Image (cartoon, rainbow, N blue to C red; front, side, top):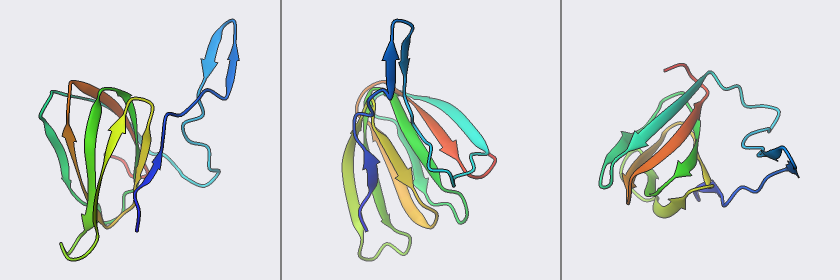
Length: 114
């Protein structure tokens, strides 16, 4: 398994009024919760897994090390750097943790209410 990440999302449309970014439009995902989360440098978030929920994280500012691993702690483990403008997808039943390398903020778009 590899971490599903979209790097440096570019605007779909630009004109004199500004830009439109298509962050999520797969025609299937039903988002039930959107959270804005801020983090201090060195903070660790997540470090858990979800039995049902899947979510997308869109980095608004800052950067983090994002790690996914098998829930049983055996085998699969991968860490990537996620920066401003990146989107990372977390499926259900995958352990995940975030360590923030600087003051950061991100949006979480989840398929379950929180």
